[in-house]
Amino acid sequence: MNSPAPPRAPLPSRTALHARYAWDTGPCLAPVHCGWDGVRGRHRPVRARSLPAGPVRLSYAGLDEGPRHVLEFLRQQGVPTAAAGTGDAPADILLRGTTARAVPALPPATLLLPFRVRLVVPVGEGTEALRARISRRERRGFAARRRERGWTWEQATGPGAFDHFYERMHLPTMRRRHGGATRSVPPALAYECLFRRGALFFVVENGTRVAGVLCARRARSRTLTMRLLGVLDGAEDHYASGAARALTHFALEWACMHGMTHVDLSGCEPFLSKGIFQFKQRFHPECRLPADHFGGKRLVLRVVRDTPGVRDLLVANPVVALAAGGFEALYFHDAHRPPRTDLAWQCPGILRARHLDLDTFLHPVPR
Image 1: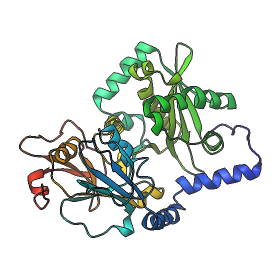
Image 2: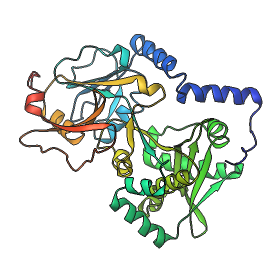
Image 3: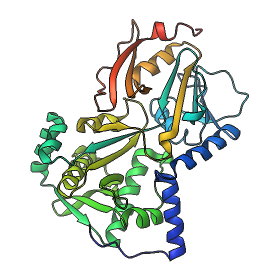
Image 4: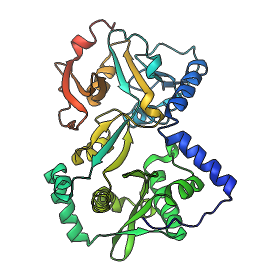
């Protein structure tokens, strides 16, 4: 790895940034962080409820990450929510964000899900083994676009490269794709904890940097973690051209050639309908619980009323559920709604797929 970029903040500020980063992402502090969040979630739970005009009456309570992760995903599925009190109308689906230690006994028509999952690709066995992991269609598509667009890959180390990436790529991309729900790492923390200790890469097309990814590395670790990415000015053209997808291919190639053992493609919510999951599944990653505080958190999904909207939502969004020894993919269906088998699930760590008949799953639930 190259020498770190020069610091931009005085030592006390840098120390505070590293402490915050360790709290948010470090495996050593994960049990403490998770326990602290669990106490807050029990005594001061965050509450949200779907809007009256929505197709499903949904209620969330518990950990404060719920609105930023789970509820944002459901908003994208057509079920927007807003902050709520305790006296609102009954719900069709109850969601609770909690810690693994505090999961209650599960009543009928209830699912226990990881709060988030991580997708990690082994790269330590060489380029041929890596190539064999990637789906043939994905490999061929990338190779064709690489030739057509003339893409190259470069690592950048100067502070100006960080500023260009963060201001011209990452922030515009997040705003374009997430709007008001945009969440990211603050620039000072990204510079100190990611850029100075990690690696910044760009996809270059015709001499122009069109996409970039900022990756994290921990001391004594041989895992490269893709943390922040973006395309130039957030332009949709660079998604359409495949430049954003190329970041993953190039990062895997680089890591394989530079002695890394794994590339962490980052995490997502436990729904197979997530576009991120479907794309990353093509690289045959290992599906794991996160090593940070999210690894000790759970999402309890309980159906309390059987409605057409509830059935539509469950069928449209198969889940990654906890199972003995790993995860399982659950696909819902009924006589009028076939299972979404177009959504792939095959990853090491997901042990099997099960198809659940909604008439059976929801039998104890009133209509």
